[in-house]
Length: 175
Image (cartoon, rainbow, N blue to C red; front, side, top):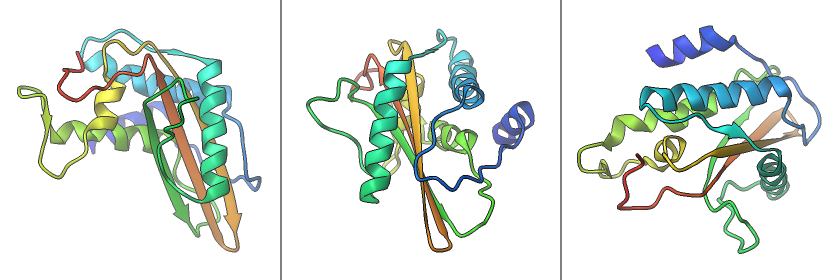
């Protein structure tokens, strides 16, 4: 909770009020996403990631596919060079959506609470792969995409981040 307050104070609260079904990542959002990833990585003395526009394009294409099919699932196509990705989705009836990229990255990185650094395992029944991908030492680049759909009074947003090189292998330590 303290991390969340710090980050929200650091970057401000961004409210999304889009009506189109696909909306591109802005430079401001790139800065937020990259800043949050690198802030977390710095806590583990890891090198910063850089933003990759090609990965962004591919992430955007996958976000578009998710919104079109109304499903949250990882891409696993053999055409997909980026074999690991973090996904986040919300559906709300609120007119002004009070969720943004900071929420997605915070949810992914709060998985550290279930990760046992000594044994390199995740607590039984918990998920840690989003967190370990963010802090994977060999990962150098990230790119993300987002898509939004309104249906009646409901709005759904999908957020996708993909990483290169794609690490996060079971049994290997992230750093």
